[in-house]
Length: 326
Image 1 (tube, rainbow, N blue to C red):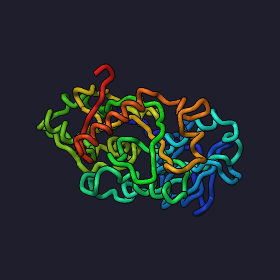
Image 2: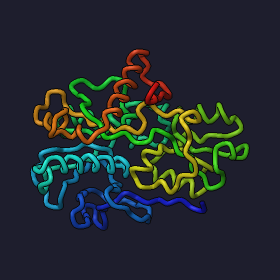
Image 3: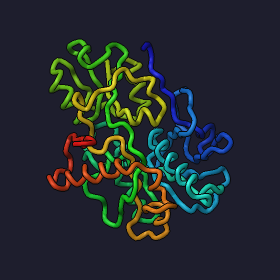
């Protein structure tokens, strides 16, 4: 593999002046401040957004009063997950398919703002969910879409996680331009990862390797750094690469025995306010519910994973994986 595909998730991008927007027909429009971005190809059914602060996106160019406001981070992967949620809601509820019925609200989190330090040094869990949860509690959004591996063991008061998207592959992907696996990397090779979980397991199995701890950024940014030979390899969640349609970059898929995943890796949770009766038809278990599009075994795995964390009272456990049949 000579180079990596840096396909960005983009249906709509900001161009030109600070509030100019460019959208393809039927896409979700974004209003924000433009900034330098990679010249990379786009792929359907997801979004790329590079902006600052909190940005709103509507389900059509003409913004109307939304029935549901979905809160999410602004990374291509987070937007792909938010749009998957939006599309499932629209498919199940005809009233949500109307123009402007669903609004996507992009919220910049602490984890997005602080890129100069390893995640473990600035708080770990909750860095990518705190501001979104606050917006939910303050009724600035109606539901929040979270990567469950980023969710703290204990949910904020007044919030619940009634449903989740179908869980994706829990495994990590090894990506390199020079080796087929971690075992084949020459001594002294640098593996880029900001994950304490991955660092610990890499150095335990391959003490001759080095780890660049502050290897931060979204999927596209990390692949670009790998292309630029900043590191010789990196590990990414296979679930994210699948959701971004970027699995062509994968060199090797690591088994759970070779790299134990994060708790609830591959799962996407939908949070709402515990007292929000408006969201009940959309997030509770009924024939008209979004829950019917979800994998029940995935929801059970989530409950068992976090039940385990509550039992052992560990808020920052490094890795754990519940396997079907065990």
